[in-house]
Length: 209
Image 1 (tube, rainbow, N blue to C red):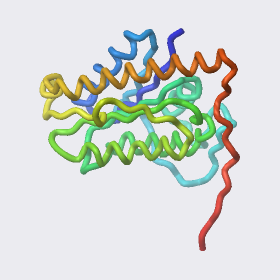
Image 2: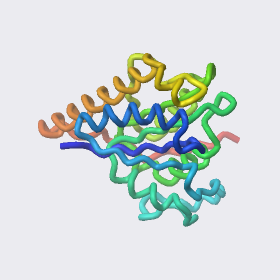
Image 3: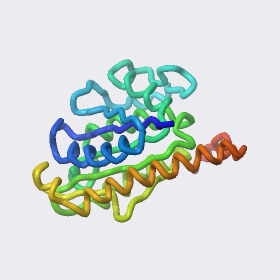
Image 4: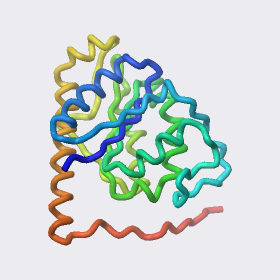
């Protein structure tokens, strides 16, 4: 049975380099029988986190702000895999993606636990691994399981046509999709054999003053 994959595309350009790499990943994921829902953040009205501490994962819409994030929260709640995709902006993710994931991960921490995750980055020349590392930190604080490939999940090019010529980068995306499909099947087999999901403890907050 196919699984649900949600991709947050942080590029302001709908048909830019990031979309070219997302297309390669999506082709691999769909060929394995999975469904992919992509949210193009550059076309959505999403505001920055207010730092109000008013969000709660147990609510249907966990954030106090009611903007286009209301489309993302339920999709992520029901999905099996979360993928964050971004162009490189000064050795980091785009502002569009940062705004969305700060809201998503704070308000949905308990919903994220146990899901598979991956980040993918496009850049012209250098710095992709720095952004890749930064994005993965969202996953590791929320009990998610990062899926790897045969190289860091990045492609290079100044234009979408350049990206489509990056054979190694596109191969990395295809392999990532195949690895996800393999892990999802193994998780299902484990459940059939009575192997339950990991048990997560309620977070202890220790403040250093």
